[in-house]
Amino acid sequence: MNGDMGGIAMEDRYQICTRCVMDTTDPDIRFDDHGICHHCHLYDRVVAGSIVTGQRGLEQLDAWAREMKEAGKGKRYDCVLGVSGGVDSSFAALKARELGLRVLAVHLDNGWDSELAVKNVENICNQLGIELFTWVLDWEEFRDLQVAFLKASTPDSEIPTDHAILGAVRRTAKRYGIKYIISGANVRTESHLPKAWSQGHWDWRYIKNVHKRFGTVKLRGFPGVGLPQLLFYRRTMRAIDVLNYVDYRKTDAMRILGEKIGWKYYGGKHYESIYTRFYQGYILPVKFGYDKRRAHLSSLVCSGEMTREQALEELQKETYPAELQQEDMRYVVKKLGLTEREFEDIMRLPKKRYRDYPNQQYIYESRAFATLLRVNRSIRSFGRSLATQTR
Image (tube, rainbow, N blue to C red):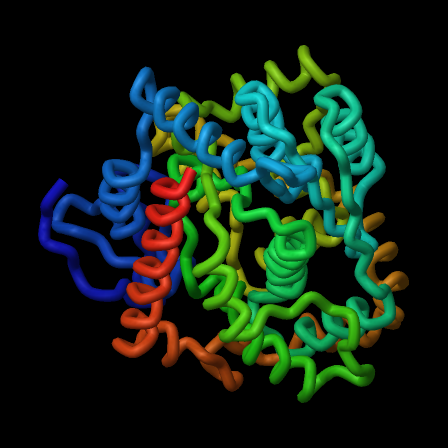
């Protein structure tokens, strides 16, 4: 689809994509002359460049597995994998074991796991014979950081958890000398992600500045990843998105996981976390007008797992049951140490965005950073080539 992309949609003129279900609740959305949004065009480009399925995909996975096993000789593990209890990371664990890899699973305990998520993680590791390392965050520090992000009034309040997962997995890999990280990411089913709805996952400067302004305790144990560490991890480790090399369909994956390891569905994408369920299902749509189901469903529409009509029908339903929303609200507010009045005041705060706080986006977008990444890739490629020659 090569239609000319139009300008940024005006807030006072509603429009919805004619291919997926993304709409002008993404303030940065653009449409072409056929009414197709820029997320769909990006999906086509990324999928064409990243997805390798069928026999070619299996051959590439086998090649990765051989490389990981070679790098893991004399070590306890071949690779590390972050597991949440969700479908993507669970299926990635299954594929890794089918490839004969010795996997170290890392689970981040941020205090919000549902009982079902914990059970899923236990089943994955027990049934597949995977060792599990649980990284437990200091609750008082993390609670303070989450409250700080709520007070910052950006739609990025899940960033602390996302950043901690990235940091915990890579710090664990470094501790055990593991060079390969298995990921459950899949561009076919996670493609429509508006920056306006959440950004700054790798931005430790942003996180620290939000906490400095609104937090009250020091972050001593939080696994933050600064720019030097980020470059080190990129140079010394390689992430393999295994689901990009298989014919991955979420519905099939959930069925297979249920049959093989007793995995159970938790009601929504990332709803294995109570806080995430409440944040995505209540705070984002009520305060910001962002329904993340649009992004998730749009990815499934473009990947052919559901029709646009089915996605539109799904959006007519509640994000999740109203009774559970109220139960979650009471639980979350109390666990965060807030009063109901304080939470109501937070919900009424003027809406802010990532760029309203000091951040390092300008570094990521600079030519110097692009050069550093190229140098990093060259060093890593040279190291792999040298290792191959000396075997």
